[in-house]
Image (cartoon, rainbow, N blue to C red; front, side, top):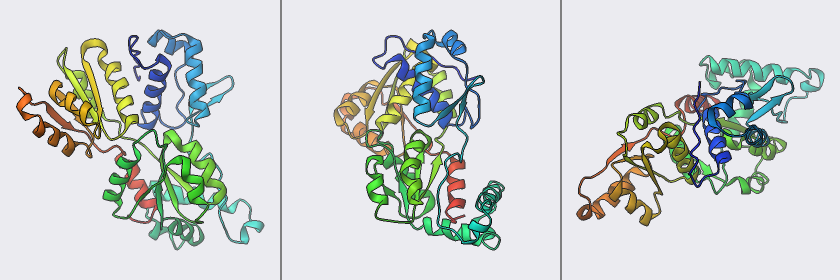
Length: 326
């Protein structure tokens, strides 16, 4: 069972702390699709929050398209593939209206079993050709304020060996209006908004799961009491969630300092004060450079832990198959 912890003296509102922790559990597949979330009563007992506050958080998650409420049953993680995308297709679809759904479901099952798009081409030529046309342009989209987009683009370009374009969610509608093919990649956090923009334009959206960071969470649990933990990333969204999770695991046992890699002043403070620093791959060389600059002021250099990739490995493999790159 996932444990949630609310830091009562934090500047981050309690509802935001709970929202971020539940979202992380969903995005990292600790709560998989169709999973029933704890009741408001259960979460109230665990976190000490009022049930009205928890209900508000669940409504926010539902508005974001992350969960869905089943009257009389509970709150469930939104199942995949619930948004219908209108695609250009064969005239035969008028004669066989259920054929498109059958082709899609069959192809998805083949992909889950490890079949590549090229291996399935002979059986599903129309569907595969459409997907391959979409693969000619890959767009990563998240909101500007999140900041994880640059990290996602770097990881995808390295893994897929193709150019990937970063498009803020706020500009996605305008960009897609200029093209009729492409694949939009986003985190589950923004899936509902991205699908609402892309689906009417016959552009598919592929959600990615983020890393569950099991090793990093284990490390935080094992840190000595009163450790000063530094968290550095390109993304303000990642920093916020990492800070909330760190306190949920350790409470007041540790001190957490955070900095965006591009914020030289805050980064310098983290380098000088922290005993351990967690960093994404893109921030790692920036931290090393900051340590070099501050070497005369550092008595004992901090241990820098290079975290795993932000995007989960299974999502990368599935994306390769979806794009015909496997």
